[in-house]
Image (cartoon, rainbow, N blue to C red; front, top):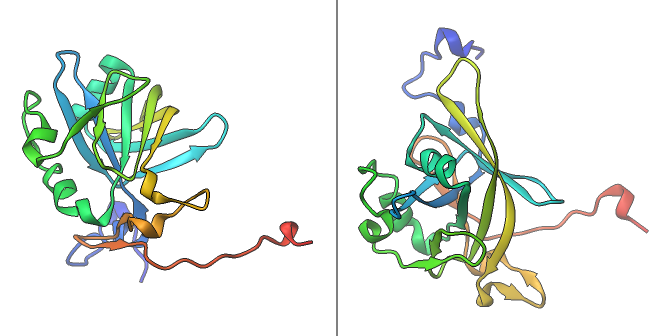
Length: 196
């Protein structure tokens, strides 16, 4: 099968998200200038640089997350574990800007260390970020937010022998349609230029 996205795919559901899988989920917490906490999951999310560490997420439309980040210049990326899947899903609901999604989803907000924003209490990891830039993709109402990571929280029980062990909390990954997966099994590969 071949299709041009502009012509449509002719399938029951758009396969695009199912092709680009698995995707990590950036559970983005922000705070408005009025002090209201916001929390929303984004599956177009990833790390983009090591030094300084940078992350990005993309939003269709200017949602509360993007508006808050533009207003305050900060946000926090919370890592989603399997045990928090229902709470994460609850925060995908579109709610008015004056509603605190932490409270609506029954999650504990904990103040960040380096930015004026809340992170999710008990999350396996959280990345405190200052805004680098927001890029609006030409010809579309899509916005890509880039941020520099200036503070990192790691839950103590996720550290095993000095390594951050993802199998200890099973990170949630977004697939296509309404499908998700978890990371449970690992294997290692050595790059050719790392061999002795």
